[in-house]
Image (cartoon, rainbow, N blue to C red):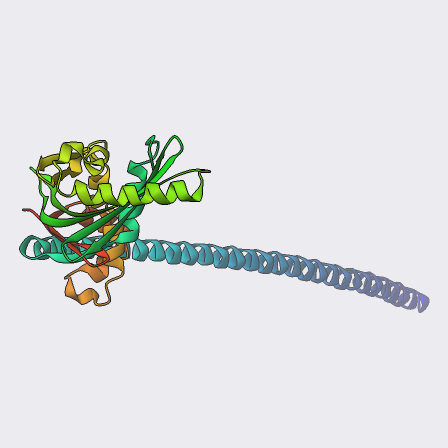
Length: 313
């Protein structure tokens, strides 16, 4: 009887201990499970945070690059717009300057000089291929022209010197000519490879011919025979000669625009001509102005031809 309660107590104690062990194991398992769960949560959180950070950084970098591209494109467009605006503004200013210069030249004239060197260069083109003329030189004085001609005929070598008074210069749409009066003639003639005495006698004879020719009618003088062979030169009366500029390449020189452009570019005071300071920066605009020039009058002066140019409205 007395053992039965002890047995029962022992049995109850054993079951209690067993239950405690089970509870301890369950608690340990719960702790382990909680640890693993927390670890997984932390790892997932770290991974998500890392991906988010990478995405944020990539987005930030892409956004920065896009902003930079937009800024660069905007700057380039701004520069292009500014350049285009400046170009248009320059064209408008040059058009206005051209109109100012045209108005100026329609009311007044500009004096320009054509030097002897350019005249002689053009004249030598006229004598190229001539069978008896080798060289020509023109000297300008005050309303005076002196023409020196060197040539040959077979063994005969000659030099002419012809002095002319310039009676009239006409350069217009209707007429382009010079009216000259022959006032003096020089002639020197000799043979190639001839004895000195023979050439001396020939030269004295040539001087006598030149002296006599001043008093002879034009058609039979050596000078007239020579001048009549030159294109555009014709006799107008005793010792009078008309040089038709449009029939030879002298008019080509007078109306050549390149030397007119050079004259404008070499002006010391650009402010004399309104708008010229803007036009000289554009060859095209300057040519548009110069192509409208016409020669109003011309005069022979020492070492040059002096021309008055303007625009006919």
